[in-house]
Structures are given as structure tokens and as C-alpha cells.
Amino acid sequence: MMSADATHNDHQLITMGRITGLYGVKGWVKVFSETEPREGISKYSEWFVKHPHGWQRFVVESGRKQGKNVVVKLAGIDDRDMAATLSGCKIAVTRDQFALVKPGEYYWLDLQGLKVVTIDGVELGIVDHLLETGANDVLVVREEGGETRDRLIPYLPGQVVADIDLQKKRMIVDWDPEF
Image (tube, rainbow, N blue to C red; front, side, top):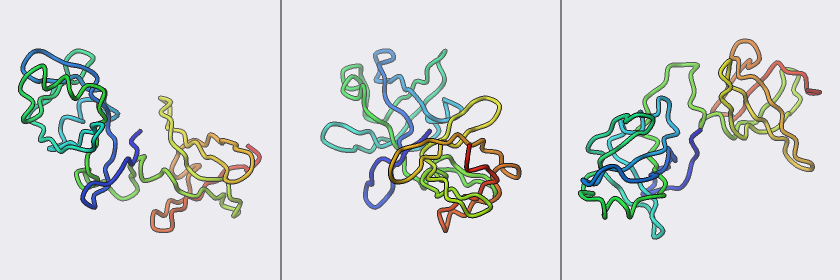
């Protein structure tokens, strides 16, 4: 799950993971990646890394899967001590680095925040986030207002999800409001 984190020079930054540790003595870092596949995070040409004093841009020199981990070499980070200063920092990329998707395909990020309405016009809430369950993804729809109630709605385009309109920030679902 990726989340919008901040802006940098009028570009929306999307959190993609964090630096979790060090790998070797030549400045490589271990990364926790929220991308699918995990090593996909190393394919972005530049990262923004959040230090306590703000975001800093880095060029990604190299990256790969290393066992269960992903390891990455950033330009200008050439030894273990320099890499240690990045440990625990968030990693973000700009939205314009995302690959284009085919019509009818969406990044999870695009679905978050959409108003969910049944085909009969009953408002169910807002897509808060999505869950990956294995069989299919699940929308977590949070009711607006008073008591917070989460609905779990299968993300099944053409079956449960009848329409998605990103311009209107709306998703229409074939779903019983009592569930």
C-alpha cells in the first residue's frame, strides 16, 4: 500500500518503503519495500529520502533482491557510516515516475479517498485503504461522520465494482448497504 506523503517542488511524493539497515561496507542499504514485486522499488531512477530536516533527493545507482531483502546503492552514499545516517528513513518517489496503467487498471493509491456509492445511490463511505488477501483485494470503506464503521468490500471489477470515476472521485458498487 502506497501513501501520499508530501510534496517536493510541486510534485506529489508517494511513500514506497523505508531504509531498514546497512548492507556491506560500500554504502549499500537494506530496504523494506511496499512495492509489488518487492525489488520494484530499486527500479525507480530517483528517490526522496526523509531525514529529520526534510526530504533529500538521491539517484539510485543499483539495486537487487538479496535473499528476503532488497538492497540498494544510492549515488553519493559510499561507505557504511554515510549509509547509517539513512537508517529508518522513509523512501518516496514522485508520481510521474509511476508506469502508465491500462484503461480499467488502477494503482491502489488512486482508489484511496474515493466516495463509495451503491448502484442504488446509497453512500457507504470513503475508500480508506485496500487489503491484499490472496484470493482478491479488499476495499476497506470507512463511513463518514458519527460512528466510525469499516466495511470490507471485495475489489472485483465487473462483479462487485460496477464503475470507477477518478475525475468525480467516485466508485459505484453492487453491494448491500446492510453488510
